[in-house]
Length: 428
Image (cartoon, rainbow, N blue to C red; front, side, top):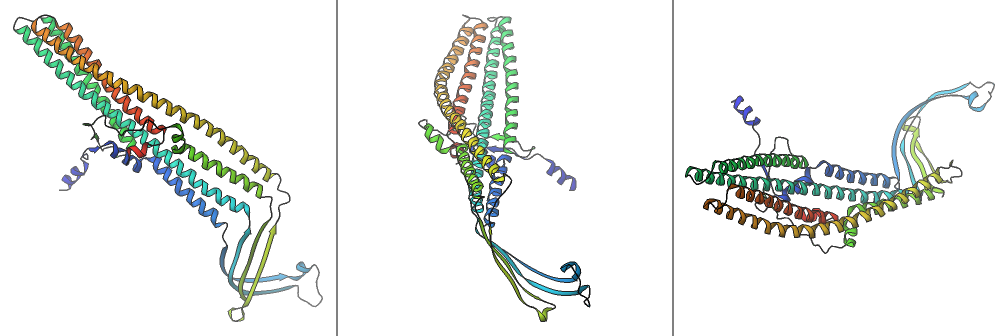
């Protein structure tokens, strides 16, 4: 029984069949980049809480027992005749609370506001990571579907080549065909079988890449559930404008949050020259023992005015100004890249749509050519060379159709990515 249980656990799990939407949703849950981005948001929220705590009163309780022995001569600088040189040792007990609270500190306030914008920046980074993860999964899934289509096309070409070889062999057996025709057909059959082997290897490699993106167990096999509706991907509104992309792309949202945060840091550096007002103190029960303890307290208000900081404040201002200039330059570069992405994806989508129409017409014509070539070969009007050429033409037309349909769906995905709508289209 123990051996049987061990063997059962050692067996490979069943295949994981995923639709395109299932694959995207699984990647958003398990992809390491998305997980790290989520942790970054949580860390930014804790940074906000830390910055907010600096604005609130800080209260601490304490209790202690102290033993003192003092040297009077060292404390006052001379000795009294007839008095001992020291006092003590004596002990006293104390327990109570102390507090410290800022009243007016604009630097702490701006630091808290900057931490809030840091959360917005982290959330934009998370959205960017999710969009890129969806883009990678969709591209890999479409590539895997293309490889699956190549396998099906190669299998159908093998069946066709086998039928033509059988036809040539029958003609030769009946004394109508020649040996060279049968040989040509057999060579074509072996070529198509080799293409099928290559196509199956490419499909397996593409599925391995998809499993890696989904972060599934290495022993877990992944299968495509959308093989029937192979080129059925969500539609994208081509009328999306560049302005819409500016509103939805998370990269720009992140830069805007970082710019606002840098501006607050610049204001905080400037406010460091202003006075800071705070209150502090303590209250405690103090005495030689608990029975003799009496309340003691100290309350004070503080005003701190920086007079000389060694150039620290000016350096912080300059650093914040340089950060703002860098962010402005990055924003200009991102805007230019977004314009290029939208324009390129729209042009590629229009071109791919035309390719699909041409490829469909081409494969219809190629199939008619194969049928006519087979009929002519059967009737003895043509030899097998014409049939082999028709087979090659059908193979090229099939490859063109698969590539055109793949490029069309990939262009739609690129357009969705250029306007920041990958997750909205493929995960919901």
